[in-house]
Image (tube, rainbow, N blue to C red; front, top):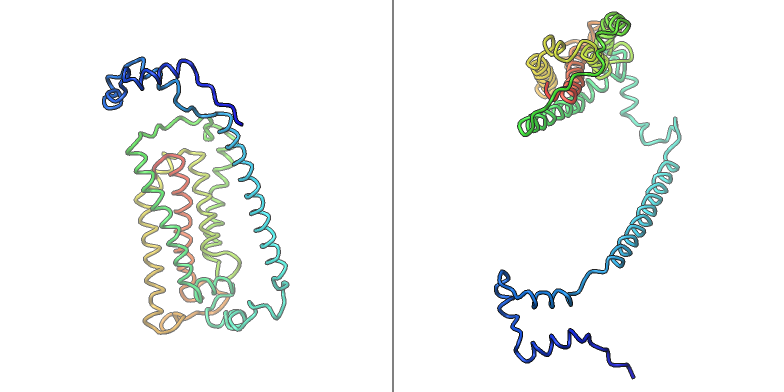
Length: 306
């Protein structure tokens, strides 16, 4: 038989007093502000307490289980991806799903239909020009989101502009090299922008080079100097005009009933700078959007404002 548990003598005396009506806990429960100190002390003494060692053991066990499940899940997805890659068709396989009439049309008729020697430029700015317009609007939307977040943070908390520990403009070597290098970067970006339909390049790569040139100028000669030359109003105007022109130009395809803008605008002679229909101005529009987006991100995260 089990031994009868022994009760604490103090608890037995309190239990006897409460049983005989000599301790009233009802009033203490109803009005917590006027509790009997003796009663509260007695109740608190026998209130169940948390076992911290058991709780820490439970946390360690949960973390161990989490690590095991995370490892198993990662291994599963890694094996799944490796199996997918192993079952992909080989590079250059003529039976691959991507080798179809669409790719053949781009390669065989691309230069004739678009006037662009660079088949990639003809594809992304003529055959798939609306997809490129969507990508440009993604950049525009990201700048709008960053602008909204920065404006909200500046209203809640004043942004303190700390003085740079390194002033690149005071360095003779950096200032001299950048004074020679920044114009070359800008000229090279313009070349890539205007020559995208004739050789590798185009709006995205040319805009990235132009944006890098502006960022280097702002780093060396200071954000305040750069903001006086390239103001926020100018950036907004350029981006809105570029996207508006792109949208209006490609919307013309809906009214002509064709995929290309050849009913009025001729593709020109392939190989010349003024050819390929609207691919050249569309390249310029995309390049301006990319350039302003990169420069805006740098100024926002550097100064807290455009």
